[in-house]
Length: 487
Image (tube, rainbow, N blue to C red; front, side):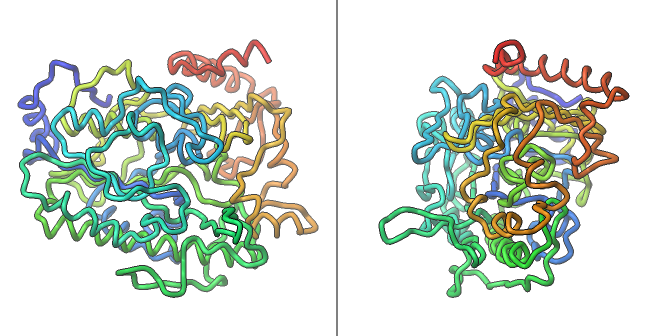
């Protein structure tokens, strides 16, 4: 079972434990948490895509551990980031949807976030790139290297090499205190444009979204382009010229981000800090395409997770334990030797599995989505085991609300114009109108097409997973628990 620090564990005891686990003493490692924006697992080399070029992420996986069953707990930006930075489910910490504009969701003021806890333990904390959580008092970093406004066409989050260079003073500082750097790109999120009246828009049809790409490139980036005929169209999308054109732009944005991550790692190596730094790479949610982002199908929530821990003994390992982004903060605190009360978090540490050691008890995950924007109310709760997945749509009479950046995408518009009205293997009607219960055998049906919720042969499975889900909702203080009894 993964190990949770008791409040009585001292830094000296932690150092001894670290030597035993990883072979070299790093009692106070530096920490770099890299969070990309909308990077699906199907578009990264080390997870099996032979077309998209991600040599730096692939190298990090080859020198660390690649997690094969890692999940966000909500497939929407601000709520997901709130879970990453607090260890609490978004329905518990109050960040039910997006932070910006008229949605204006915000975490409860009494929540103690990861950067605050690390700063109290003597870490230097800094952030660069996208922020997109609130309030800043809860998510306080000592140093803000860039403001990181969400989806800002001028944000430095689209310039990952500049982000790495801005981070250099934190990384290279002659300071005995370790640092925590939160490096959050805007790539490969869709790019919005600004109309003459100042209104932002994602409307580009029939042209593909640019995904932040531009002809003049970005500082320090070697521009890598892709031909639409070469990209790999995942099963949840229609194989159309519109989709392929957008995937080509999406791949380019990913390759730009990858180069920035490579530059960041070079900064660590040049400062002599690479071997003493815990590096984690994750994405906030699935790809910015209809059928993935904002859904709790696996393509929306099963994501890349690459970790390189100080003193690792087995580079190139894989970790098959089922972990979620609620486990990120507890794991980082565990590695940093910072005690916390397990009752304050909904996740647990997977530090014991950072070098590929099998994780006992990590055999199911839970997810919770309620809003994207304020007008996109669609509460879903999910429990997933290695074989089965139960999705409960708590407001199933409502049509599923597609996100603004997706509803205006040429991929979606092109699918609507198709005679068969199909979104990959799922019809648009099936995507928009969902029953209260969706039960899938994800081993036999990885695309989650054949709903078994009404199958008498699977009622025992449905009942068991429903009981698990209700118990989890109770344990995580889910306000939507009452929906089981009161509509």
